[in-house]
Image 1 (cartoon, one colour):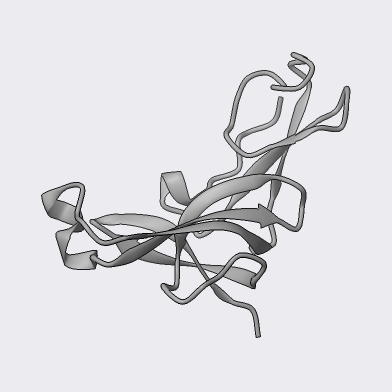
Image 2 (image 1 turned 90 degrees about the vertical axis):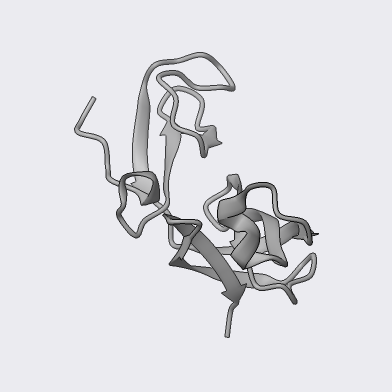
Amino acid sequence: MSEPIADWTKGAEAIVYQTCNACGARQYFRRSFCAACGSPDLAEHRASGAGTVYATSLVCRAATPETRAHVPYNILLVDADEGFRMMAHGDNDLAIGDKVLARFTQFAGRLVPYFAKAK
């Protein structure tokens, strides 16, 4: 297996997903095995950041003192164009079915993917 590609969890402005070389499945959370077939033969790729809103939830009550300054904030499930689903932050006016594009911003002291409507 090659060196892992840096992503937003390591401070890089990138979303990284895996594809299984055995069955072709795509998965977002990095694992040492394919969640679909169990194969350890995985490849990592950078995502384009483009996708479609699958679900949205506006958070109006801070979960922690660090998130209080961000209320209200939107949590999304986004179906990435590459074929995986991920949870992320996004503009408060996004709706199911909106085409979106990721950028990166600070949220409660951490770099996170943040989606806005695609132009």
